[in-house]
Amino acid sequence: MIRVLLVDDEPMFLAALEALLATDDRIHVVGMADTALQALEIAEAQHPDVALVDLAMPGLDGFELTRRLLRDRSAGHVLAVSGLTHERDAERALEAGASAFLLKGGLYNEVADAIVAASEQTGEARA
Image 1 (cartoon, helix red, strand yellow):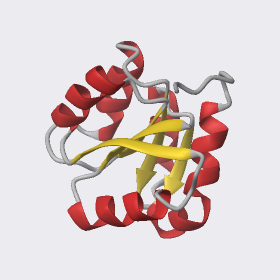
Image 2 (tube, rainbow, N blue to C red; image 1 turned 45 degrees about the vertical axis):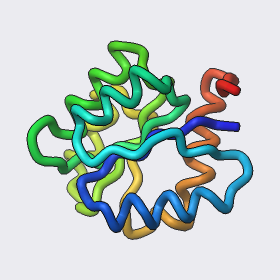
Image 3 (cartoon, helix red, strand yellow; image 1 turned 90 degrees about the vertical axis):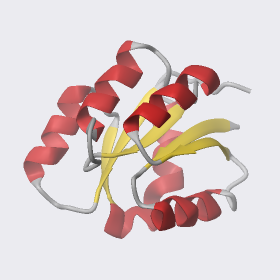
């Protein structure tokens, strides 16, 4: 199973995403965080294969969180998520090291497949 950390400052979005991913037997959500600092703590303890990170969070934003998760090797891959469609945000997320950029509006149709694709970049998922 692919171990996933969900990070977003919107509790309803986190709950909906967790419920959606619970229907996919390839994925196991190991934690949810509503701040970047909480995400760093969970990632350090759980070492998820993939972190799904909202870019627009108060305080430490998703761009810096992406850099830190990858720098510290506390997450295998990061998928950046945004409700906004600014092309520059997608570029910045990829520059920060994100494996992909997903829009929240279309997320429900593609999130599980994007998580699986990101985890397969190294061919490894933690059991």
